[in-house]
Image (cartoon, rainbow, N blue to C red; front, side, top):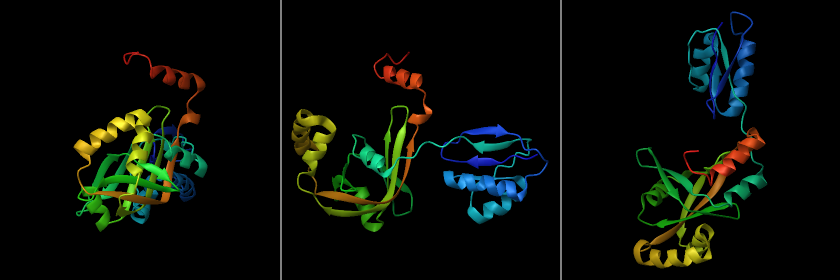
Length: 233
């Protein structure tokens, strides 16, 4: 028997038994098709090297008597659910490409309007220079409280002159009306001294994950209580 190794979005695997001593082409075609839906990869030993050269997925050849398959996938958001999630109060992580190809990740506030993601920054910032050279970006927005959920957007960004009123609207979105007033006073004196621009990101595709359906009701109750209970509990 042989091991099929899958590298998927969750990296969680459960062993099952293979009835014969070889992994037939029909078998690994079925398993690979399932892993492709997850964005991961899987191979039997006999077919692994060939398939790895074809599709670039990693091969783990342990030669142990088990077949490993990926655990259940998280639920995917509908378009309406994705829009609602992006419209929530989350800090995004913006990914841009540096001149040498290395990713540059920046936690940043944003607003989601009319299907586009808007961000404020300085014209001289690294992310602005990266976007002007290479408009491809990734934006990850997640709910850090379990049960977890996330939307990862892949798209193109453009740098536009500062949108009027965006700063005030963004501060109110994140801090509320009272907090926004104090933030804007402090920001105008200490933070916003450069030439402001607006980054406008148009999503081209998205990966969504929602683990709430995989969490039983008593787990959700405990996670809710944990938000107010002492950390040691």
